[in-house]
Length: 387
Image 1: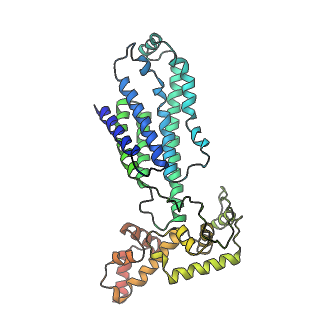
Image 2: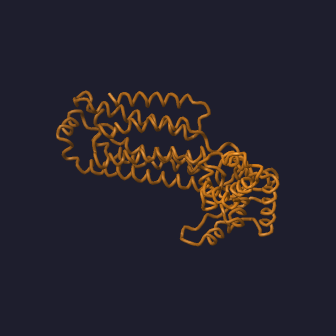
Image 3: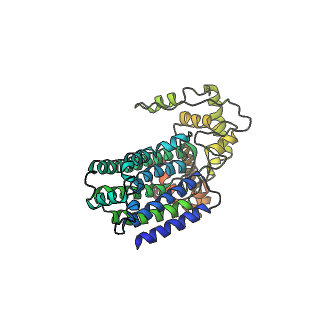
């Protein structure tokens, strides 16, 4: 019964997703994935029925290769959600190559007559042990590789947040991390327990969370912030756009990595000094850091400069990424405001919000990161100094 409930939930979520307005690429990938899960579930339900000549073709069908689809779909969905999909769409299909190769490899079995398949089924696959071992090993490897790969994408995404945004709320994709953990649990069940009833039971829970959280997710990068590479040019940019080299993979000091990263940058020391001075002036006069959802692209547009150059200046001159730079200024602003007698009537959080923080957890985390103290410890110390 639980499988029918799961299938119903799956199809319902698929219907909601298909009719969702303003779908993005991640939504489309999720829709296809949910459809694949639905077909996989249907084939499993058929497999629960007693085998006979009428249904043996369904029982011994390409459904055995469906587990090889879930890893690639997880990767593509995670990559689309983090804006880290390869630009070459042809590469996307390569992830489904193992499933295709497996289907071709098992084609001689699929083409057997119903009587021949029944004989294999009743003999529990005797004579095809090698094919079964290869299939299971490929499924196990695929699942674990794609789960690890998806975690790597989330790690890159977290780093990219630091380079592009001054906040993490709503864009940290923690919900997607939990989904990946959920799929990891399912793969562990597949490898350790090898019991389909447990596997598909866990799958029902997973698909419910996948559909619910996936449908609720929104695009992180709007039309004006289409990539983490800073593809949006400001109006009349004073500096010509240059490609930025990728950091070298070998272990090096942070300084050397930065030098290699910006080796091909067109930003001269004089231009960097001028941009840094203008940045500090804007921060001092306009206090842009008090905007809760300030982004690198937005700030670069105000300075009339390409975001790559602004990121380079912040990295090299402030020795911080954009996230840490802005939140350090917010912490310093908080320390300044909290020390004023006129602000004693306000709560800590009301002042924190005034400085640009948009949640208590973000304030506490960044305050301790900058000062080495929690806000309460700092306030206690400040009180003792005044006393």
